[in-house]
Image (cartoon, rainbow, N blue to C red; front, side):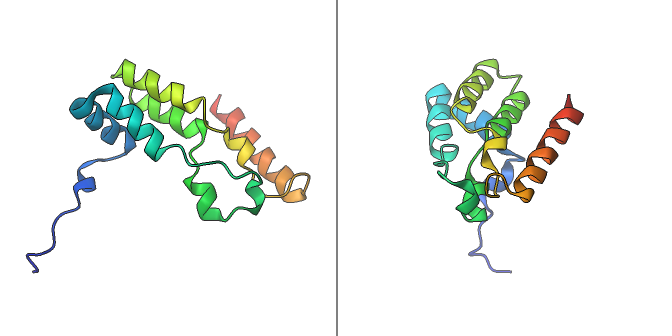
Length: 120
């Protein structure tokens, strides 16, 4: 076993919510704001259907941040801060990877609609 290999410090966090809770505990709300800006403010491509898939995945949607805020409900101020940042992010439905009006785009939007309907 090589003694030069160190454990990854990110392994201690189960998900983004636990990382945000840790940052809040160590640095307070200002540190959480900074983390949100650094980690969750990827610019949205003007034409998502022309963007590479990796670029679309890197864009955080409003729904993802709202799910994150739900996980942080035991920290109401932090959850409120995450929700406030979520409002600045695009809706998942606006990130369609297919050209507008195409058959694939219509199928993709129908799929999103069905998922939203099942969830409610």
